[in-house]
Image (cartoon, rainbow, N blue to C red):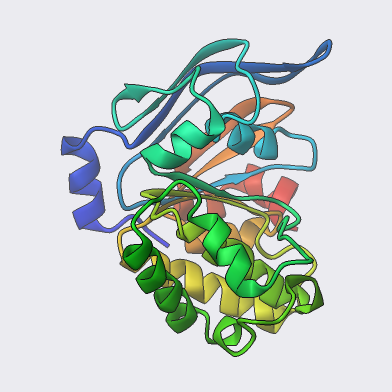
Length: 249
C-alpha cells in the first residue's frame, strides 16, 4: 500500500505523534535495542518487521513503558514520556495489544472490556464504547458473558484488540495479531485493522507475516539484531530485493 498523497502532504507539515530518538535497551548484559530512531505521524499504519529476536516486541514494550530505556528518548504528542509509567502513557493515549493476547481467561468478555477502560472515569462513555466494540467485533457481542478463556484463538485476538481500544487511544500498538490464527481469521483481523485506521487510530504493527504487514502499512522499518537497517514506504520495502530475500520468501 502506497502512502496516499494526502497523508504524504500531512507528514510534511505535521509534527510526529510518536518519535524515538537513539533509544537503546539492555536485557542484563545484552543490548536488545541499539540507538534506534523511529517516527510515526498521525493517521499512519507503520509496521516493524524482522526475524525473531530482532527487537520488535522490545520496541513496543519500550513505547508502552513496560521496559526501562537505557539511553535515548521517547516523545509522544511532543511530550517526553521516556520516564513515564505504563498507566500514565495509557492515559495520554497509547494502548498496547500484546503478543499472545494476554486476555484474562477466567473473566468474561464484558469484564475484559471493562478492565480495558481502567484509566477512565466516564461510566456512560465506557458503556457506549463497549457497545461500539460489539458493533466492530460482532462475535464478541454474541459471547459477551462467556469466559474469555473459552473463546477461539481468533476471538481472543479480537478481544485483545477491543480491550486495548477501550482506553480510547490515539496510538495503538499491535504485537503479532495474526500469530497462530487460520488464514481466514487473519484476513478478518487485518480487515479490522484497516477499519480502525479509517476511524483515525494511528497504528504501529509488529507482524511476523512481513508480506501482509507491508501490504497493510503506509511505511515500514526493518529491525535486525536490535538495529534499524532499512526504512521507507511500505510499497518500496515490498519491492526491495534485500527485504524479499530475507523476509518475504
